[in-house]
Image 1 (tube, rainbow, N blue to C red):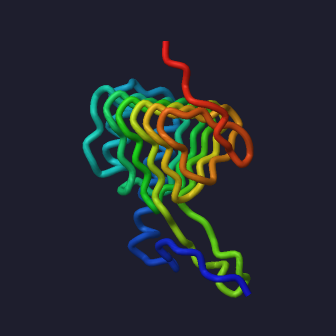
Image 2 (cartoon, helix red, strand yellow; image 1 turned 90 degrees about the vertical axis):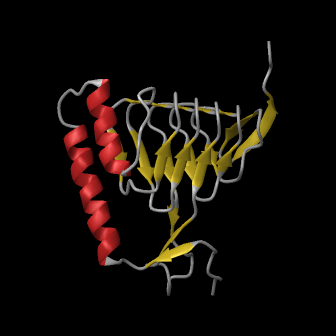
Length: 180
């Protein structure tokens, strides 16, 4: 028998499901037709139930299952086709770039079949000026350090130190960023 991983355990409260369905409805509206940048930010404000700075840019389609624990920093950017499983909380810090088709998944399940239907969560933080290339997957509990770069197609299972480039599956440190 496996041990239960640490993290917040959700078994499915009515309040959580209500929030998930509200977020899914807003995402469906956001992803239907064309919307100006201001209209997209207004959807993000409703989804996150928080202020979203006018410098934030998100290109639809954008999918998120639960918005109230998600925060977008000033000058952050999320490209087309990203998916956030955000019940555990996602923070996108100032100036962070997220490439197309990235997945940020704060949620996971225990490996033990007897408890596998439990939903566990750990927050994700994308640090200031970090850059996630196309099709990156970031798993629960990971912090991407300030100014770090995650190469396209990587799967990030552990924290990324500030100022480093990581690549692969699982992502490993390749080298420090070259500063010109």
